[in-house]
Image (cartoon, rainbow over all chains, first blue to last red):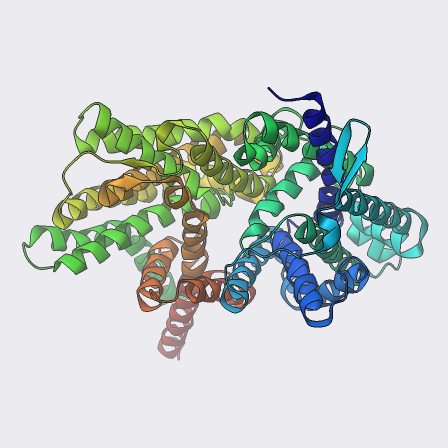
Length: 291
Length: 326
């Protein structure tokens, strides 16, 4: 029989983990909302961030959490040429061609990771990853709390960039109607490039946190890609706070499935939820509005 | 357009009508002449025909109807499990089991259609990807159907020649379905839905029905192919039969060969099987190279190898026609 403490702790862990997943899903969501691009390489960007953090720690001893912004920026810069040279020229052929290109990119990168970094399971070893934090009934690993706080800060920051800055205004205009935005002087190509880079940065930062909390392999990408899609569909495409709530909801449901049915069912919950929400309420639980 | 070019194009069109069956007839020689093919050749032929069936089905879905699926593994897997279950439990003849496995795939596609067709276009891709992964995780975790270890077929190992004949029959069926489909009113309906679903609905096309019908036929063919694969392996397990690799290979064949073109899938299947044989010892490199080829072709030759060939033939035809008119 499960104790109340175990259930409460598990729900709390799921809640916090959901916030971190929401950060990775945010990247997928804004790319989908602004560029109408299904980025199937999103999961691989996440894994790329985790590898970068892993090797950075190994080579220099710099803590990945301190280096979170440089890691995000590095993957964002690496993503820029992908958008500029592979996706942008295909945009005129409709949405399928860029999507299949990202799929090609995903399988290339995943297999290059296997070739160069081996298929071994890696984890970013930090002392604080195992320190528990007890609050009354609930006991959660400290790193979950750190990750959650960082993720929520990052999500709020992205919200402010989009709702308060000149770039955000251009971004919202491009999302609603790219040709009208271009007609009034918005550089839509630049907006798309920066949006894609921002999406990759969210994936890489979230991937680093996931790499500290769990372990990862080159093949982890597909799994997180689908989890992120479930969150995007739950929260409504392009809805930033919907994404956060969707992530938390999914995190809690995954934890509950983990303790009641077994750990193997964690990922299945996300997929089943994804397909059911698509069937029943495709606009998302909280409605979509463009980023 | 000059007279010569018109007749050339008409000629090509006529070949196209029969071409699918000619390809099947070519494979049939291998079955009709005994001892023509070695055991190894028979097995390569099996794989090639199986891949052509899968690619033709995927092309029907994506090329003709605009439904890009990343969930081929779901249908291959369902077909495989149904065949093993049927043969172990009931002892029905193999062709009947393959047919029922195909029908199970069609039923699965109908069952998930409310979810995957709900949002337009791209969500079909993500929805089918999620379906494949969900079925794989389900099969690994639930205690029925052998769990992660899978099931063994309690039957004699089929001979290579027997496998070859079964898949040949499936190939002939597939080519008939596609040839009829590609030259009937249905193909116009499918293309109308692909190019502009709203406009098609405006002029009275029942878009949902067209999409569902295409999805069910394609899934039936894929599940029948999965069933034959299981009969060949005499064992099924979730990692292999529901593996993402099926979905990747099927998509790669059609994109490489030429999406929406009559011969795209056949050319793509030959290419992918050859590449697979060449790089059999380097599985990661094989997939990475497939990915690079995909990216390059989508960027520079969106109609694949068949598209390149067609352009070359047209260019040649124009030159011949030009020489005549001088």
